[in-house]
Amino acid sequence: MSGKNPFLGLGFGSPFASFVGSSASGGGASSPRIVVGSFFDDDDGSASGSAYIYNLDGTGEVKVTASDAASGDRLGVSVAVGSNKIVVGSYGDDLEGGGSGGSSSGSVYVYNIDGTNEVKLTASDAAGGDSFGTSVAIGSNKIVVGAPGNDDDGTSSGSVYVYNLDGTGEVKITASDGAQYDDFGRSVSIGSNKIFVGSYGDDDDGSTSGSAYVYDLDGTNEIKITASDAAGGDSFGNSVAIGNNKLVVGSPYDDDDGSSSGSVYVYNLDGTGEVKITASDAAGGDNFGVSVAVGSNKIVVGSTNSNSDKGSAYIYNLDGTGEVKITASDGAQYDQFGISVSVGNDKIVVGARGNDDNGSASGSAYIYNIDGTNEVKLTASDAAGGDYYGTSVAVG
Image 1 (cartoon, one colour):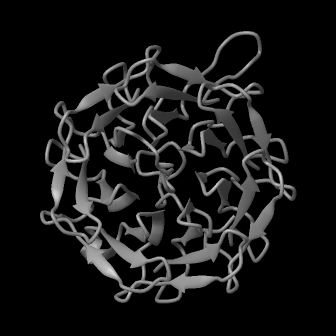
Image 2 (cartoon, rainbow, N blue to C red):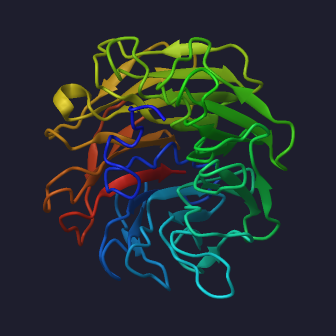
């Protein structure tokens, strides 16, 4: 494994472990919503976690917690919204009984757009440490769940599960060349009738050079993508997004403009036509590409350590042109603005889980128009220090 940690150097299970790729909205919701995850909220025990639902203008807050919540579940580590459903990952959930599941086997909760009618999903072959729910996506009338700790092809080789909107019809996907520590499923996205999976730990071009895989909705017709200029430690696939007939991949430890300056790659749905994006003001340590999103004919990229470690987000046209940089009007050092991003319904949402408005790392999120204007700041009505609100965001 490379010394470069795609989870910001503080390890799996840490509140600063970046489990967020993109939270694909999937579109098609008749009642568009914004969802914000707060995976260290303590309502039902330490780090039980929660998620918050809002209208597109930031009003109408509804808080969601799991009906069977427990300490360490970390509900809200990942969120997605689309098809009039909200999906929330809980990778720390511990299944019990009958030899099925175990510590951090993980689960996912599906709700109606108003937070009602909870349905819980767990993998049919759940096992301890699978971390099912680390990433989630919804679209094309399917739910996709990443379980990067799954061990089918070696320790943490990873897997992905696909479900109908009602939680039935499970299909399991593993990479055809899966190997130990690939972390296949650390990031997932769905759109354009394709499933897109990041595997940042893949070693094809050096340790943790990374890769991404494209599948049909039934898990067939695998296409593997690696960067044309891949190198060890780049962590290509740390974040992925699919939409507007484009595939977007974050590579936050790419070194083009200094160590871990970061980059993003854009492809056609068949993996051709690579376009590489780096920030016009790139610098070492920026981690540009730690989060990515695509929608409303725009690409959005998070860069948590740029802007004097306050964080920023960048907007591009689908061809990588037309850069617009967004920073929070009240940004402060270590806010981690850009740790999560989402775009849809002509709105951009950016998470800043390190924001301290309501105590250290209580967290916040920001809403913008598609051109980066008209900022609206969100904080939880019951915010508290250490909640890490904004760890994940979704709009759709």
